[in-house]
Image (tube, rainbow, N blue to C red; front, side, top):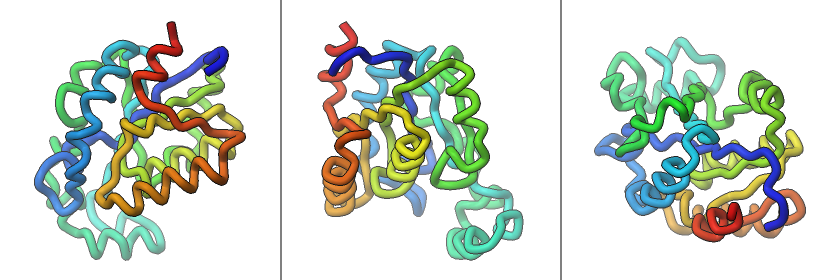
Length: 194
């Protein structure tokens, strides 16, 4: 694995609204939770949990996001119980020292806040887990590559709603971004830390 450098675990959208019985339920989430809980539990001060936060109502969002939330009106703040925004399982108990980073879009990079935080901490490596591999994890990973981070995606700690797009996403990342990204298993990463 080589020297890991200054790293952070970026755990993408492991929230109750995806883990529980909602229109956005991701059944696979339960399969990746043990790996995420182990990594975040061992290194909570290095863990940042992103949370996808829907607007109160569709008109609060611009352009095509408004259309998106007109389709998914039941997932807006005026209908979704607020506690479903929070992290699933045992993860909230890790905050602090783990941190939240709330976002309105698939990517956490859009407004520059997260990059500024990481730069102020001299972070050069991001270890990415969470859901979904073909949406928010993909947007997070591609943005991190563009911002020149070393990116490690833990393939047994990311999930999707559909096997075929999960497989296609990992294949895309492995084949097209092999110089800038590494795929590995959670235990392999943890072992490499020594």
